[in-house]
Each structure stands twice: as C-alpha cells, then as structure tokens.
Length: 142
Image (cartoon, rainbow, N blue to C red; front, side):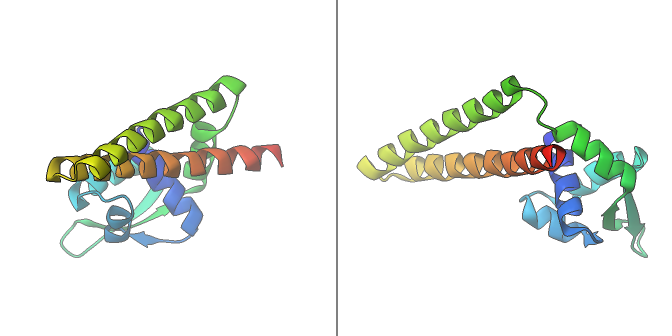
C-alpha cells in the first residue's frame, strides 16, 4: 500500500462516513484523477466502497471494515526501530526546512522562497503521516 492510499484510508476512517472525492483530493492537495486511480485500487482490494456519479466517475468513498483492519495493520507501531525511523525522517525534513528558511531569510529570491515552501509542504506531509502512525499505535496499546 502506498503513502497516498494510507492517507486516504486514514482520512476515511477518521471521518467515519462517506466522503466525496473532491474533499479527499483537496485534503492531500492531489489531482482528482490521481485520487480516483488510488480509490479504484483500494476498491478492488475491498478496502473501500465507492459510489459513481451519473457520468460513471467515482464521486464518493467509504472505508470498509476490511479497510479499517488493513489500515491498522499497515500503520501499526510494532518495534522501537519503526518509531525511530519515523522520528529520524521527521528530523531530516525539519533540518532541510530550517536550512531553506535561513536561505530565504538571508536572500529572499523566488527560488529560495519556493524551496522554503516545498520543504514546509514536505514536513507537513510527513507530520500527517506520523499522526496516523501514532494514532493507530496508541489504539493498539489501549
């Protein structure tokens, strides 16, 4: 399961109700067709249920019980090493963000500002991934 598929499952589980494709695409800043392609894969694995519009395009999605279980297994914290790996990835991304911030502060060119924005988006994405990683981990240990 790729990162976007995990994010989609997390979003659907967190909402715990049917969500429209445009809301999912907006949440993860992805193209509608990219999200629809991932939804087809998840639906083919029976991890979600989808509804189609009158034009035949996927319009809404809901996580299935099998999808909830698969998501929990795919994101569960199982070892100290997996936690340390997530922490190390976040540290690397934060270091890159700090470096790009300092560059943009010293020399506010368009390129440096874009680099800062790109690094901020990357940190945001990693942090979102960590949120689901730890949420599921905490559920397991309750």
